[in-house]
Length: 455
Image: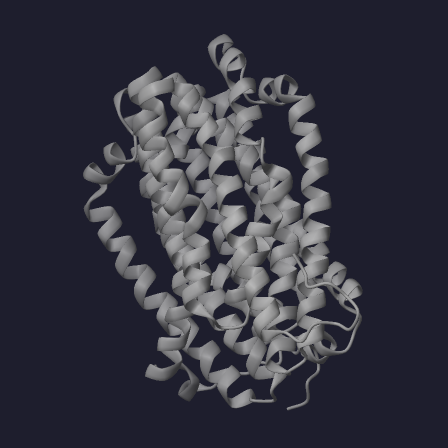
């Protein structure tokens, strides 16, 4: 098999590659983020502010199951990128087949458990009072489509590992567009309420999966599987698990933070405070799209060149990825700081939410310009197959700093303590990641002559 798609990762200039890989990923994430934002706007204006809070309660559970597919995708894609870089196509194919089998088995099991314990999970994640009823409606319907979403997210990572970012972008854009169209008809025209919002979301998952399936069955993919590739292979599963666990652990911690924040905020300010966090959370997803796009584009480049034993290209990709992501984050930061009131007004007309959310948003985004170092640094270790440092650095922000902060600071500062926990966690985790990344570069990557070591 010739290296039709992936060979450019080891030959083209790093700057050009990063733009080529990151731009489609950024556009895809942007469209998905806009989809979440507009979906929230539709729900807030056509159903009510409690509906926004209800969706925010459901997201941690559905996202965790879907993140299992992403974890398997990113973990396996790291193996595939390095395997393609070292001409080991047999391992690349076997890894992909194992990814599919593993995703299906685990996600279906988790969906069954999620539906079984529905009455315990929704209140645990903050679905109390008037939030519970709409949350239960949304939860049941969305969960049916989560295994399909997990397969789509897994496949999307593999598409990028093959060096085909445009197809990965389309796989993200198509369901987002369909979801918005379906939202209009199901919520506004047919007046299906929360059920309409849920069916629009679930239907979009199936569209994404259909496109990903078409890609791998077409001539565009290098990875052509047979039945033998789906048979589970323990050494490959172990490697997928060790690397994918990094992504899964990150999402697990995110789910825990949702649980804690929804409950802490509900106890402080009731449904209104949960809604404020829901709006800020949607903006957080949206605002990070350029940084996440550069991170997604960086992963296959670093992994391929590491597998191809080209350390100088790996080092250059780190430097440029941090610079590009940081520059983009600074621009988004400026917009958030200047126009928070205008942004919040798009979501709701509720006076309480309009009064409380802008200040919270400014605090949450205060450290946005420096977060690129933390994301690129932890992604680097995952890309090159070093699971332990990747795992620890991934947990640094949410697990080691953010969760302790939100458990301590609200006791002294109330709701303000929740919001200032965000920039404090960002700042501390960035320092730790910078130290680890700099040490790794000095130790294992050949420094470019007459230049200082990165970071």
